[in-house]
Length: 284
Image (cartoon, rainbow, N blue to C red; front, side, top):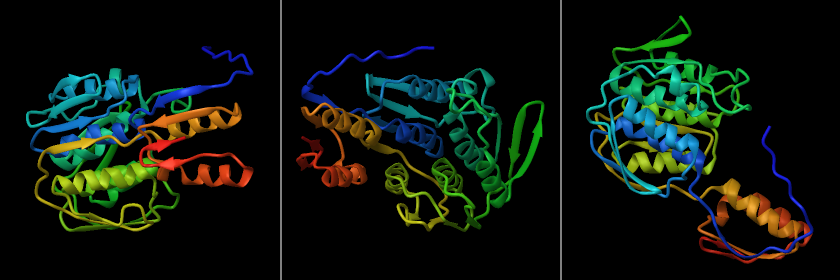
């Protein structure tokens, strides 16, 4: 098994840039399926899961054009497949996030149980995804290792999450954007990535209110247009770099971050006497 060997003590110094949030990018990419026009995504993290998501868009018939290492144009106008292939789905758990937009746009989707890393490969349930599709009127069939979901038209409904789920909330939002009528979600997750997904879709013509609170309301729209977005900074990276500086008593500047996304950590720093300066997109 791969491992890191860290020899200390060492003092850190200088500046370090935070990449775009993986957990945001892996929802924004499949959300492009909802759009009839091009979507430009900036600040994409150059990691395996993100690259697999882009490959899946192409595998389904969409077009991906890289403008630079962290910026792409995605066009799903001619996307014409609704089956997520096992060869890609087995590589990353976030492949499940493609199910909702495919179902919303085409009324049908087939996908295997998602794979991924050691954490995700242990049979993590996808109950919330299946329940959300059923709640919106879809029929679910499991056969030959694939889930087959069909719905002539998704219909808005009310749903209470028995357990708070980030990906479940995000999937339900995407499934509801083009649904007929109003969908009300209760006991939702409230992470920054959910707020960003909702704000991004609203800019493209969706009607989502309440993201960032326990209750979210989605009024279905007939279509979603194209546009641009810049992936938010990765709060896990931000916190990791800040903790590295605190643990080694170092003076480190963390660039391209969003301090308000790590307020819990910064409050702990205050309690234990860690000195820091919080500026816009900067932690020192």
